[in-house]
Image 1 (cartoon, one colour):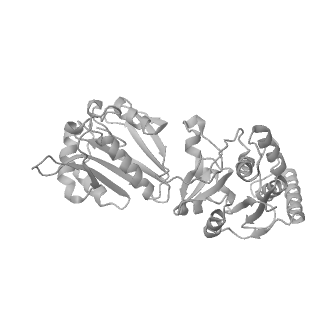
Image 2 (cartoon, rainbow, N blue to C red):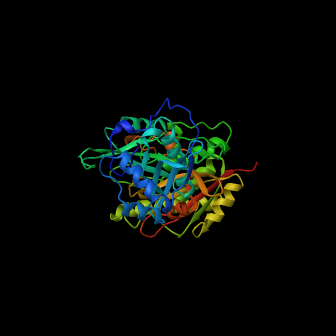
Image 3 (cartoon, rainbow, N blue to C red):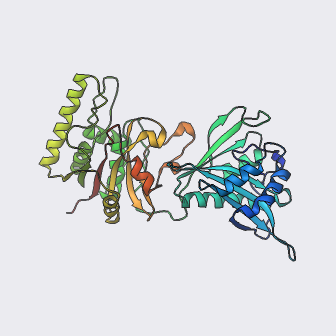
Length: 395
């Protein structure tokens, strides 16, 4: 048995993470209310406690924010029987899905059914425009934990006293990228400081579109110095769109600025008059230099259609997003949009949450559903929307 957030039974019934014997593949199909009795019977056989009730099964099977997958098998001359299930929850307004529960019948353990259900659950979550799947599992359920780890899940936390017998739960997450990766030739670079996301986006675009450009920390800091506008009394600050466009132009790319409002940016939260004054002067300098370079400036929120058209032409775009929406910090953050698969904007996010177990694989070529991207591509109370469209400069 593989159990996610619904409390778990014993670990001995968990599907093995490796060495599963081949057998006739069961049918994986959507669960319906007609499966209710079979689900209840399976639940009683797999879990000793904390079982999903009849009422809860019925509600989950009917809820638009949930989905069930069932594994159905049959021997010759026998009616189909339920061998396992996976239940998913979809939180409205987010890009996340949660594996609520997953179970495999004791007689079907070792046939790879748990792994198949997990894979189909991931595919279903991705099809529902989710970019990550999360789950909880008993801390003593070693086979299930091994399966999740071998399937690309990373630990993101621990809940104490989570199950009825007071056993803690481990939390895992996997970034979902689908089965059709978008290849644009844009290499990935992880930022080496807390404040150089903008310059890293420029470096990634330059590495593809300017022959001979090398991505490395010295260039990262140089481009940051050339593009930054935020004056901090206690430490470094970040980049703004005009500065990024000027730095891109001077580094050899074609650039255009798209901002939802004219004038100074990022000043609404600055309380110190001296700091606001310095930031305003820096931004005025960037605007003048952008004008001198004849960099196009569009003072209106960029549309998703405009961004998609630019990506289709082979361009990239440094896009301002809410750091709170991406990793829970109320800071402006730049990502590089470089692909479009027909349902997602594909981005390189230069920030990797190493302390949470993320790797480059979690941040490179991340497909973000159109609706989610449209929502997070803004910052602050004013909902500032900004992007710098980048492309090769014609000789």
